[in-house]
Image (cartoon, rainbow, N blue to C red; front, side, top):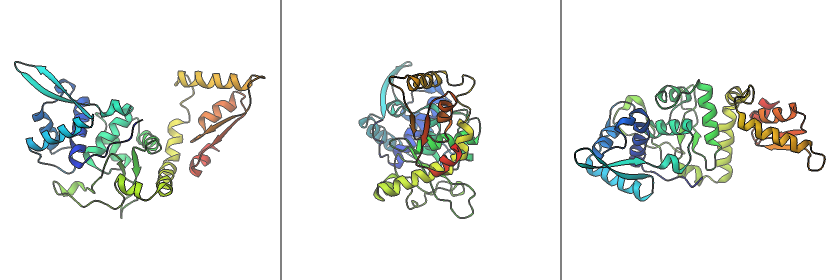
Length: 285
């Protein structure tokens, strides 16, 4: 996966709008400049609400095109119309669930898993909150990380998450169009500036916070032919490990809740799981 872009707030809004409308209104996609303006400035599902003019959106689309994050296409409908498509999702190989979460995070800022579950319903069918948390954990441990968990704020029950595609401003649904100042540590630059050890500690903490949900979502994914390709690969590993000439112990690095290691061990392999997150090891045990 290539390095993540460093998007401005305006670029985040334009890309988020293109990502959203491609899924929710495919009949109107690709999008004209006027359609992009309307999508950016709509009052629902946007925090903060913006009032971008045509010149602003033209400038942002041009900048995104120069970064190969959007592409231009022509469509005939009586007259030739210049329209735009996003290319960032394919370029970075985002899975549908990752794409859905990033779309909403780009459009609405920091959010808790429960809110993300509700707000992504038209973009991806998460079964429950645990599945959202499992996806966030996977994204937080990607290389490079796509999201990071934020510390709880006063009177908040849940941690909120932000994307790492650029600076994220603090937002509150009650503030409407007003723009709040950025929270310390809420953007990618501050995460990187803190150093590798601090970054890794935050990633491990995020991973540990969702360990139980991750385990609940993944424990049975290798059962009942739910993942035929994955189990086929694992069966090949088991056969190789049992071969007297080439076989031996199997070590799974980054075992998470241990379901893959357990599958190998149940089939007779001498399997051991290793993970840097104590909470994941506890789930595996």
